[in-house]
Length: 316
Image (cartoon, rainbow, N blue to C red; front, side, top):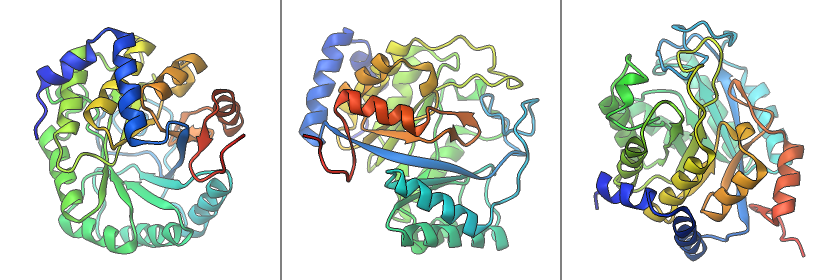
């Protein structure tokens, strides 16, 4: 059933403690509240992207300093996946800085990577840009678990962030992914000059997908020098908590992932996010090209909060 912007906004604007309390109840009704999934994210092809996303240091349109690196070799990717699995990750995500992948040797190599990671017994996710229906089918056949294709922000605010593709194109790719039988991983970025209503609009769009996304990454903008959004005002951390809580209420079965920007969040803010329904993190020193808390810091945080990595035995 479609979710209206007004309905999402009415939830997002509830008194914070009431909102978190309700979201925590929904979370406990659908998930183990002590379990957090760890996901690793690797940039398998970096820089030189033809899109002009205002937040992204990999865009060829900006003066950011991300190096251009060709598509990685499959053995190197699988080595990174093994190390991530050994460190507690159950999901391995691979990102390539493409507007859309072209059929041919490089796409075939991505399919090889997907088969290899799936063979390790891990969930496999890729983000490659826009897809054709046939590419989505081939990824599914190779063993892909989920496809990440973020909407970033509301349809109303999207044009202020990206001009080289449309919101409709993003939604069309999500439709092809779902038609292929793949799970959708789709979220947004907070702190790009959007209003609270824009956040509600994004959440309403995500919650209206049929089926709802398997996972929703909630990102805080990492302000990278040389990108158009480098001077954006920092987002209020409690707005991130509100967004997580609203996502949990609107999408009870979805994994809500704390993604980019966690270095800007205190341990206390992250704890509130977990209470409000976040049950996954991206871990590792980097997320694609931006910094991220290291595994040691995450181990310490999860231990302090009494949270368990998915698949690990519970602590006494």
